[in-house]
Image (cartoon, rainbow, N blue to C red; front, side, top):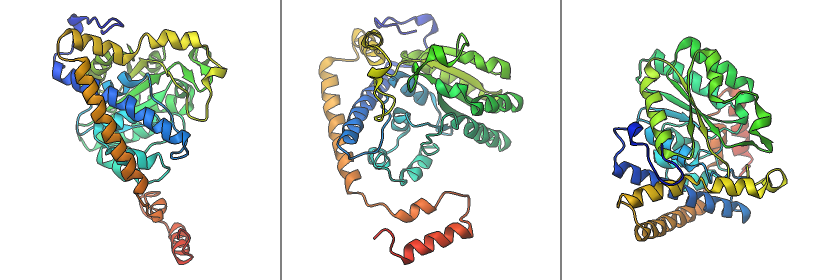
Length: 341
């Protein structure tokens, strides 16, 4: 819908997407990229744990998050930083989490999210369970679960889709197809023409969109959420990971510079910037001012996060719906031994 030159197909333009809303989405995309750069810098300085950059995938994340309603819950993997940002997670909570502290799990609950989960494709069965509960309780909400292209090869993905199709739960599965499952390219990951079509066998509606087109992503997600009362949808967002899989990875060992350069021309931020600038609702001066404001907020959040003192007892909580005796014994022993003093 929004091509690389900033040209929009108005025949499909979402009726509820105003210029003001799109400006807000661009701001979040810029914010996400700045937040990403800061987190990466902190990790390289030893001030954060292993980190998964999102650069290049801003449209997929901001587009899907902007389509969510207040009552909806999202189930992230380890790269949905922009989704948390749009949903209102405090910046300091974001950086506290990437210091390796468990405290952000409480913050995630407040923005209707599960905690960050690294096991590949585990998000889909979790989303299935949440969506099943939503339907059972007639909550009128949807669960939005994120999975990468590599995750669509996992049994968790297929099993969850199968049951989602049978039970017709309000589940939206976002496949964030960024081209590489760590060092394995999409072409070696699956022989399916698209990843979206994997939903067909489960009797689930599926759609593939340009993941670097925030308007198309927003439209597809909005429609899927609106239709979730009738059943699930699989959305494949075709985007690109411009950076490394995580900070433990070196992408130069398995992909060419030419490939990266080709995708840089499809930058999701650049095309929105051109479109809004041509409409007269965005300017270079305004962006510069906004970026400066973002940098200040990020630095303030990092300062708060690095002064934050965690309560180690939290690692024993929220593991189960209640604390079993064996875990309570470990907690009591740790306190008695001043384990974390």
